[in-house]
Structure formats: structure tokens, C-alpha cells
Length: 350
Image 1: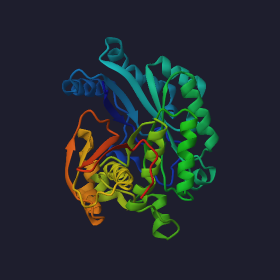
Image 2: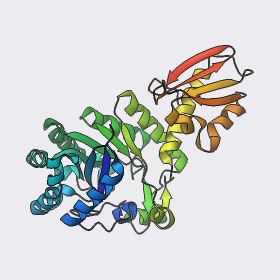
Image 3: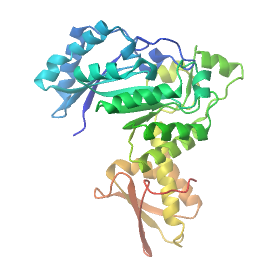
Image 4: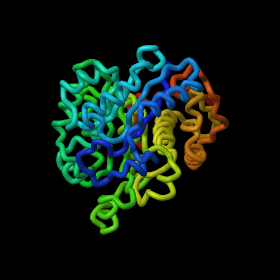
């Protein structure tokens, strides 16, 4: 059963330096003030009312949790302990920087009910990290992941393709490196240039060219596909859609309110092309079947996949749901063929 995550954003709290791309207040829509114990309790109670039977997980996002003073960390975690003891909350999740985590800290966090630690990796290339002002190297990430996994906690890695000095090959290397090092899940946030950041100044002066939406989707498609084949879930693609972010803060880069939909739409389009390639059925209308959760991905954003198939003389009679298919599979049928495929298989990227 999927958990319901109760989020608390402590934007910039504990951060030892300012990365050139960062404005967490714009990203989260939160000033990042550390919540009082009463606020934590009230929010957990409020979220309980609509969570049904699903377990709750409390998450402290943004900032660098483990760079806060130990008494402040203890204060935040202790606010959740009564709910852990009663079973009303099943786990705590935190996010932090690789260079603010060691084995002793992980052991202490585990004893406080923390089950998941996400680290802001961004890249596994030292040149990219230096150009982005991260203040640590890739070796720090490897040490952090080892500390998390060796204590039996779940490790998440947040990657940021498209930083200065990055390339598709480096982004793929970064992904494969954190997976090999033990990451249990991935978040992919292609670079968005936010106003009033150092990266914005680089962009406006012409020193930096960000990924476009199309370039970001093409790269994320490959990264997600690699993750799927390694059976590592990608739990987020792109920044959360937020009115303040959308209307005020985005200057350039790979920003789209439904970036994940675009990425999975491209993966299913590639799969359909591959399934259709050896089958001479362009004169026969086809029916596509997919998992109910994947209809929009198969059709494509604004029916883009259907249009592109039509341009190749493939007529899609209808798209129907089949709950027996996995969320990664689809089938095509016509009067002369029946084929089934999965985006977890080898794909030829269009």
C-alpha cells in the first residue's frame, strides 16, 4: 500500500553554501522556517483525515537536514515520535547533502525513526559539481550512499541533468554511478534557470545555455529507461508545478508542468514504433491496449503520439485499457497482427 507523505519544507535551512542554480523558496513555495512541534502535530492530524487506511510518512524536504544543529534535528524528529509510537506514522524521510552525512549520523537517524534519506547528488562529475558551486566531489556521494545502505536505510538520489559542463553522456554516467552505489530510487530534475540566481546571470550573459524542454525530455527519456531496466524507480521527473514557480521564477530551461507525462509519452511512442516496425499493417487500423494509468502516455501529450503515427500512415482506431497489463506494457492488434511489448525492454530511441 502506497504511503501518504506529509511534507515539511525547510528551504535553505542548514545549507552551508549557495549553489548557483538554487532558490528553494521559489521551488517549494515555502519560506523554509523550521516548524514548531505544534505545527508538525497539527499537519499530521490534518493529513490523517484524508489518508484513509494508507500509512503516513513524515518528510523533511529542502535545506540540509543533517547540517542543522543536533538539538534542532532532535526537536523536529521528536515531534514525530509520539505518532511513530502509536503507529499513526510509519516512517520519517529526510533530505540532505552528501557531504553532510557520515556513518555515525546515519546510525543516529536510524535510531530516531528515519527510514529513508535522499541526497542531492546533482552530478557524479567533479567538473560539473565544481562549476555548479556544490562544494563537494563525487566521492562524497559514494561515501554517503554507502553509509545509508550499510545501515539498512533506503537511499534516494536526486540528479540534475543540464548543469554547466554537463552532457548527455555525463548525465547517464551519473545515473549509472548512483545506481551501482546502491540508490533505491531516483528523482530527476533537469535544470530550470530561476530568476535572481547565479545561474540566471550566467544565462543572461551568454555563458550558459540550458536544456530546452525538447532536449530535456529526450535526455530524461534515456535516463528513465536506464533506470527501469535496472529496476530502480524514478519517483519524480521535473519540479513540482507551482503557481509562483510557473508565473514568477522561471527564466529559462527545461520547465513544463507535466514533464513526466512528456517523458513517458516519448517512451511509449518509441515502444509503439518498435512494435510496428516489422509488421506490414499500415493499411490496417490498429487497437492499442495499455494499463489504465498509461492511457495519456500512450496517446501522448495533446494526442501527439496519435498524430505522429498518423503521419506515418498508421491509423489508431482506439486506445483501450487492460488492467492485466503492467504499467510498462502495451499491446497492438489489427486484423493481421497481435504484438505485446514493454518500455522496460531494449528500445531504439526515436
